[in-house]
Amino acid sequence: MAKWVIDKAHSEIGFEVRHMMVSKVRGHFESYEAEIEADDLTDLTNGKVSFTFDVASINTKLADRDNHLKSADFFDVEKYPTITFKSTEVKKKDDDEYEVTGDLTIKDVTKPVTFKVEFNGKGKNPWGVEVYGFEAEAKINREDFGLTWNAMLETGGVLVGKDVKIKAALEVNPASE
Image (cartoon, rainbow, N blue to C red):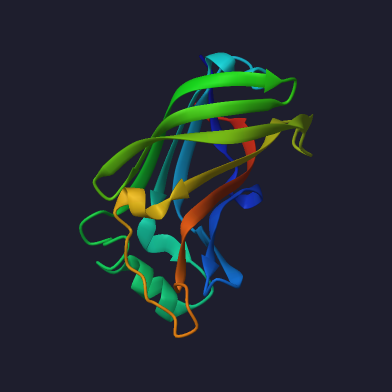
């Protein structure tokens, strides 16, 4: 099987979660590794996908919030520095849509998660390298992974929503040998 890597200059892996019941906070990970093993990226059904996020690289555009997310209240980066995903199954839904199921590990909890993946197409960059584009999204309940910190609001509701959308926009290139 051929190996493919994420072109980080043209990709982003992020998330969004409800804030104060009225808006959404978005963030991303500055540092991550990702690899796809597949003979043909236009048909991922026999492929394997893996990701590792460096949790200390979390960026929500607010240093105080990022530091809180890195603390023991949330990700506890001192004890659990990475989040990982390893695919276990890929199902083709139609010509350009897949469901990629795998094991997501946050802190010391591993649970199956399914990403909806859309193949956006392929082309050649100005240097003649074939590139492929994908978008992926999954929704998890953060409390299932031990991320339970919250605060009640005076007006009712909570500061941080339970559901977190993980979103990825990816440009993929052949791995250098």
